[in-house]
Length: 468
Image (cartoon, rainbow, N blue to C red; front, side, top):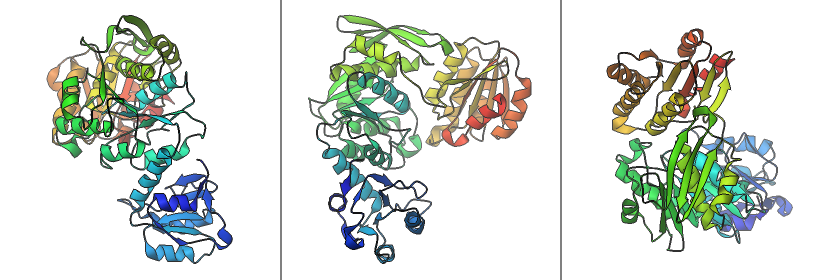
């Protein structure tokens, strides 16, 4: 983070400097934290009031760890911290909004920084990595670390960027936190990508149409000079729907494999764990894209990055070369070796769409037996049981040998598989520990196991249990 002084912070957060450290000490910061366990040197701490905890009660711990600049919304805590005489205290009405306001001003005042927003029901983080690979081939580029894509994550991402970057790739997620319009207000990207509109967060938005409208708010404030790139292989994410619902006049660029897109994918080849490739046609130019990653769905995400690359003056050939070096994240379609079998670890998160795409990866990869281990998915609203059943039915329609379902919601996956095929062996377990104990002894030489569930299921621990 650029060194930032107390007056700038107080103005940005619309707060009052309630107390100053004696001698005007500690009057600038080089880091921001909302986690009392992580207090860097010269840190500014925001005491966020969350659903489960009020961070004001951690202020004594933060002080003991050396933090001397705090933003609070509780006047009693402002008095307590100010009484220490060596702490700068800023009092605001709402620390959550204050963090967002500081993030917005910090990015607004970053002269010359170009920003790209990434959103979608699934594939945000993978697409972020593709964008990073393409853009860093020409520019000094920063990106969202991990999946810090919320109203807290986006400001913290901004503060974490190196001071010399020219382009920032910012992941933006909508769900239980702030609305997409608020996130867009903070980031103000000049270009944005929507990977797809699926069924994630239906519990929050109710219908896919409302979810589409929410995702399109990533382009809030766009004009014809701004570019919105969309993957029209997502059935609801058509150019016509985007034009009808987007809150701006952005130039819309389409990517897909159906025909008629600005960037058209053809001759798609999925070699399972050995990678994927396709041809990409834009105008009169066609190039061959080969990715060292698992899953044909990643080709569309990579071409979204290529389309953004051209906005930034990077040719398709240059993008293809850059994407050859892309690095994927842990627990996202990574291959782990067991004693004499292999496991595809895709446990980072899940939706019905990504789970079905993972099943495709499994069946397109070499293996003696194909075993799908699928756990509960969350935030699917009233359609949860139906969507889980559809995954089981999809597995039954493919050459999957064994389907293992885990968790309360996973029971519907098992039921879907059993009802769709009498040939598919289906096993169900309430928790991952019992599942691991049962599955490990049954694995044979040459088996290929695919593992996926929502993040809170922590099925990476299942992977560890069957491979170590």
